[in-house]
Length: 279
Image (cartoon, rainbow, N blue to C red; front, top):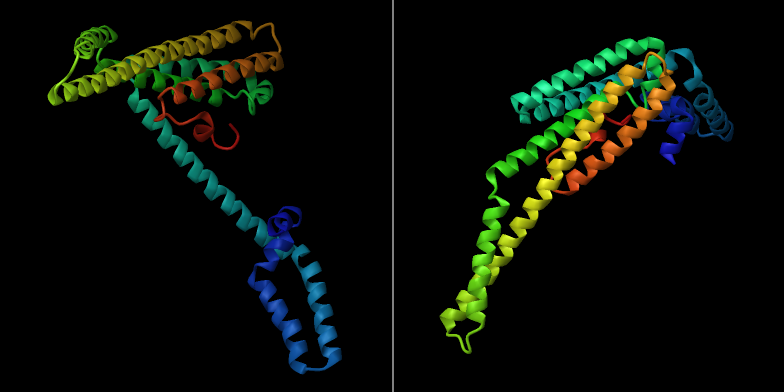
């Protein structure tokens, strides 16, 4: 109820929670009840009702509320911007020198495209397909690519894992083929079966991460080639049409980013976190 009032009548909602409302209640209801006559109580109630209805609409109160509201919005935006800058810095720190150079080149391409669009035409790209959103999508993909490369660089290769699996499978089959097993042999069989399950899980994870790497690299190429194409076509195509095409590409890129996160890229933030509520 209170949230609905704050949405429909923000000045009145703020007034009801302010010291001005407390003083109004004291000076009308308090005095009316203090005099303790039916007429004074009615006058106090009437004065209180009129005050609640009209005082929040007065200029001084509105200006004070607007100033407080603007300060709250500014503080929230400053906090969001600080969070975004920290996130971007953490993502950039994951990149290799080659990744940072690729990021720099793409950022310059975004800036060049924005300049070519001009202030009036660029407004069609501001909300749904802004250059900031495009640039941050590219940064996220680069960070994901770096994460997968880092994993694959330290993980055992698929060939080595497969060789280990084959060797242990042969041991398990040899042990299981014996008629009766001693306690030690039974424990050895259980141990090797557990090791076999662990190695198979590692091999499956290695394959998933390899596919993640291919997807991240493919989406990077898609985004870069799309922006190159838009830059070339900007001479003859209207900005609204280019914005629509760029928006469709971003939808596909964001879907791939979600798949990458679900595939093990939990350390990377999503685009909404990076851009805030307007992403």
